[in-house]
Each structure stands twice: as structure tokens, then as C-alpha cells.
Length: 431
Image (tube, rainbow, N blue to C red; front, top):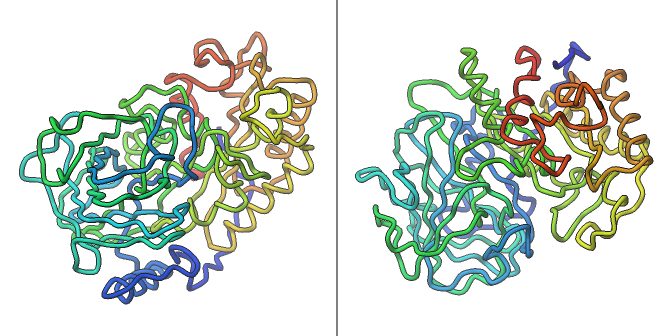
């Protein structure tokens, strides 16, 4: 259960809180309209709410075969995501954060998903960017589309299709989507059927967000971002079933009559204190971009640190470099996250680390650091509240291990039932 740890919250959001990327430059009509939208979102008058999000990563080999290092050339990319907030208009956010040259978008559409790579006939909406159907996303930058009138319900799947007519070079992506994305040669942005999309992968490319708005209700600042590593990302959850703990939490909130958008900002292998070529920028560098600056966000739940303390317990080359991290160093990293969230007026909830006994992250030193860190989360009162995943998922017969009913098999990541148990452990009143 989450325990209340603080009753006050400093609200000191600055006027630039939701700038998409420092120094981002876009040309033409999009330059002025994009900056106007950013100024709106920095205050309380934003017309958009983040309904789905994904944290961008550098191109890499990843955990499964993907297209990030090769990129795209004269192809159409079709990606399916599930929104946790409804509305009557939508826009997409694209990221070229790790591109070395501008990303050319020849065309884009958004539609309600039918099945697989197929979309619902009559729902396809062509997207524009500053009034134009084509766009260029600068190297290192982000870009939002214009609004598209499309009715969406919470928990509805949305298909975003991008035509990449030229050679992109290595692609900014999210390695583990636990959802199928599709690719076709040529331009198939307007296709309702999926026959042309003969290739598939389980990663997302360039797409970092889907936002919604409504003419019927005013946007609220009540979005919840789950920020962390592979456990937040949903490793070992069922593909195309929306079984991450972020999905389970959104569904639980809705069932309780307290619907709120829930966004997933997990990256598999991510660390609090160190960057990784495979596992993303360290948490203390990416918190604003991937969580705090999303439109409509009011709360962030932080679950991260197992990789910082566990990578040094194994000789796996993908875990290197893996400096030995003390409990004090990990706590200081979390304190930085807390300060950054509060500076932007966002409520910040901490989480104890899950049991790691029997996993490749386990060792006497890692176990001791995990115990010390979890004591700090429970007793320090530095987070606004906390959720005790360590207790919620522990095996009663051996508390250093995940309970067998919740274990995916690697003794580190939960299965679908375990992710549901994580959502059930949250006291919804303290989000």
C-alpha cells in the first residue's frame, strides 16, 4: 500500500516547464504555432492531455531484432498504441532525439485500430504539421502534429502511420514495446487493410506520444507517469495484450470511478546514475523530457535502482560498465529526482525495489543495498508518498524472492499477474 509521507507540495512550475527540447528549431508555420502551443502547455491553459507516451532511446541492437540501427528507406511504418484518456481530437509527438540528421516525414495518418495492421474504415485522418502534410524534425528535436478531429475512448487502440520516403539513417526508438509494429515498402499511409505490411517488430520508432483534447471537458493536470526501468517498461508481459503495470493501474483507476491517464516512461535496463548505450540516458537526465514535461501530468511514480545495484553482480557484457553503487549514492540520485519533480509542481511518489533473490542481479552486496534503500523509502518521508512493491510481491516463505505466482521465471521481472499485483498495491488516494 502507498503510505502518506508528506502533506504539502511545493508548486513552482516555471513558464518553460513544457518546452519540448531545449534549443529546438522548426521552420515555417510550425515554428510559431509550435512555440505558441508550448507556451500554453507551460501554464494551466493547455488544451492537450498526454494519453500515451514512450521514452526515446538511442539506436541499438536491443533485446529483440529491431530496425533502429538500419533505419528506414522509402517505407511506411505503422504503429499501434493504446490511449488511457479519451477525447474528440488527437495529435502525435515525434522524437528525433538521437538522430544525426533531420527526419523527413513525407506523410502521416492516425486512425482507430481494427486488428493487427488494419485500421477502422472511415477513421483515417491525415495529419499535418504547421498546415503541411510533410515535415522535418531536426536532429535532436521533437515535433508535434496539428490537431486531427478523431473521437477516441479511453483504452482504445490507435494506429499511427508514418511515410518515410527517404533514407532516415539510424532511428530514435523505444526498444521494448510489447506491441507489434509493422512496415511496408512504398506509401501506405491511407491503407485501411494491413496486407502491405509484411514485416513486423516489437519496438516503437520516432513516436514518443499521443495527446488528446476534448471540446466537452476542460483538461486537468491529473496524469500519472510511471517512471523506471524494465519492470515499469513491462518486460515479460504478454505481447499485444496491454498487461504492463501501467495498463493495470489505469484500468484499476477507471474501475474505481477515478479515471486518470497513466503514461509509461520505463526503459528496459535503465539506471538512475549512469548512461547506457543500450539502456537509455540515466534517470536523473531524462526525467523532465520523459515524464515531467508531458502535458497534463500531475504525479510521477518512481521505481528505479535495481540495475544500478545489480549490474555489478554479473559478468554480462551488455551490463558494462557497471560501477559498484552504494545505498547513499542511489538515495542521492533519487533525491535529485524528487527535487526536479517538485520544482515543476509535480507530486512525486517513490517505490521500494522488488525482491531480487535468485536473479542475475542478486548478491550479498546488492541485497544489502536494496534493503537499505527500501528502508529509506519507507521511513525518510522524502517522497510525497510511497508504494511498497517489495512487500507486495515477496514470497512469504522467502521474502528475498518474488512469489512464484508473480515470477516471470527470471526471478527479477513479474509476470502478468505480478504486474496486476503491483497496480493493486497502490493506494489510489495518494496518487
